Image (cartoon, rainbow, N blue to C red; front, side, top):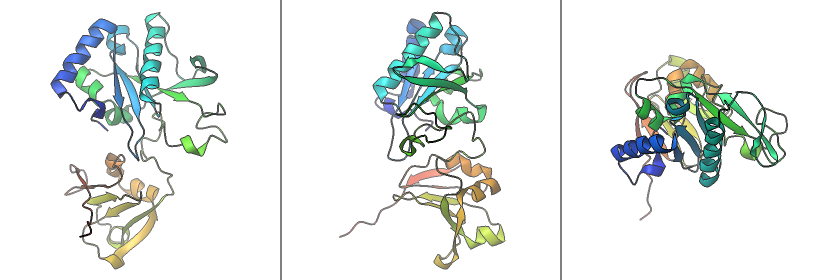
Length: 255
């Protein structure tokens, strides 16, 4: 998710040039990242810190046009001299529903702000996440929030130790070698059905075991690095802490 897939039609250098031009002209650039079957869409600003000494804004799970418009609306509020406050309930962002902003934990910045990091370079920046309510005007952390929207906006002020979208008790597949011999996970598969496989690479079919996802992440927090592995993707590394190499899974084609 560090790549901004809505800009695949232009080069990285052209995107950087466009970003600088828009920030100089409008005070910000809005980046839109489309959803996949697994990953939610999101949009974020670049330039609010430089132009107005204000944290950048990110939001998840909204249609592209709406997300783009909402961030520009928030930017207009900021341009008029108002500072957006975290945890304050806002009723002027959406029609007939509430909104709140959360401070984005620094550990989550690299996962979602790729173009922003390219723009600022070594300069640090803060960010706020816009949170919307469901059709009953209920926030994700409130009781009876609609399950349909539960994983459409990950909460970036928390969960730095567990970045996966699924529940912590999700059933996942691993190996006897990891469970009993403490061998490292070197290959992770997120198959087309949504199942996660955390493999040591030396397993046989009879070695497969079932554990909760949280058990794996607590044991090796570097597994958080592939939390955004899409359906039908796999990732491999040579050792714990090594660089993950991501690939599309090979599919068996019938003759």
